[in-house]
Image (cartoon, rainbow, N blue to C red; front, top):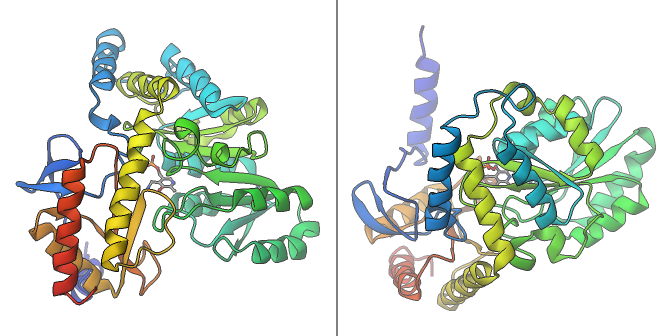
Length: 391
Ligand code: PMP
């Protein structure tokens, strides 16, 4: 087989300065890590609350292995549904203050499986232009018509609804709760109002709002106090919750339907017990105390203030996701490389993950960072930023 067409594409990436190799992590994903043999401050992890290496979660995982073994052994709908999965869904529904929750193997396939199960030919999906790739893929899998509205632009959303509502049976408005590359929050109260006015369904992917926004990390819907007003809320269990998996929170009838038509539930093995048990502990920790989310927000405010004072462009971030906008793709990757040389790991994000010309390094502050680590990172940003003429 001649794969020279792929070699040519790789050569183009190298030419554009955006070719990369996978960094290798030795040990847990924490505030400070060993990356490719170098000890660095980690500003790229989604481990917002430090749960990925939390002693209580690890203990729960070990106990679950002893009791249940290492794999679920089947898809949920055959014989892969353990009492642990049931317990987790009940707990999550309580935590999210929703009627029911369905857990999937990842946030990605939760979007892919849910969207295509709920809308079909004769329906319309109306999606924010900056929605996550897994939403885009979920939309592609659905036979519904699709259209986008300008990012967080409520006038544009209303225009789309006005022009199209009459032509379709169901209209589904989809937005990220927190946008993963910019850290801005969707104007959910306005979206819900428009959905009510035009009799549309609402779908919020809250991967980056879960464990971050709202009371003890209950998410963007809780942040705006919109319980019962959003039809489908997606959360991930792999970022703030520290393990793996995704879920959709909503009504009993939604859950019932997904059990019959949510393809990842029907055709892919369920989460292993060693993943489910620590997730249960994580949710209980959040229900017990707000200390994790308070530490996260305190660190995020501290770090952002430090970078802002130096004159970096942090875009529109309203959350711990802190993009430092550079613009040019090659310069973005060079900035990221130079930060790493000085002991700070922040991944460069360029096209196609973000639009061309809006390259950025994306800093993820976590509850696990110490003020000393954040101070050191700010000092390195200052040095490299001056060196490269960014500030
Ligand atoms: N939605 C959004 C907005 C995300 O940022 C991500 C993760 N990058 C996902 C879904 C997918 O979540 P997971 O990593 O659990 O598959």
